[in-house]
Image 1 (cartoon, rainbow, N blue to C red):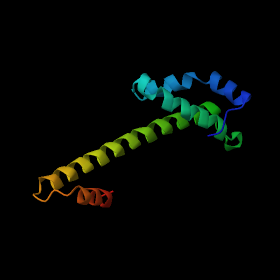
Image 2 (cartoon, rainbow, N blue to C red; image 1 turned 90 degrees about the horizontal axis):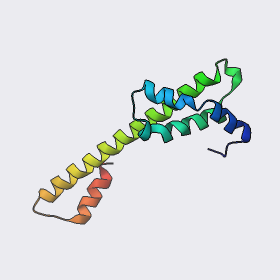
Image 3 (cartoon, one colour; image 1 turned 60 degrees about the horizontal axis):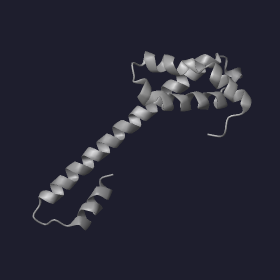
Image 4 (tube, rainbow, N blue to C red; image 1 turned 60 degrees about the vertical axis):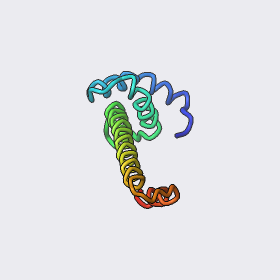
Length: 111
């Protein structure tokens, strides 16, 4: 994402309330998702094309929501990978032949 121009900053400032609207509509914690939503709003102002025939606030709302959902998916994937790694480590460490190098190789193979 590139630096916002003065005009883009003005648009973001005018539509700042959309952040609270989307987070509230999704029943999420404002402290947790505010920054992610703000990134979505900034991206929307840079990518918006008026010729597509929808209002900016509609487009911005979709961008904010998508940015939040993308972050939630990323967090879930990280948790899954963490649990897989722990399970694999536990299985390998339970064997009588504990070899740290082999554990690392198998963990890399399971990704």
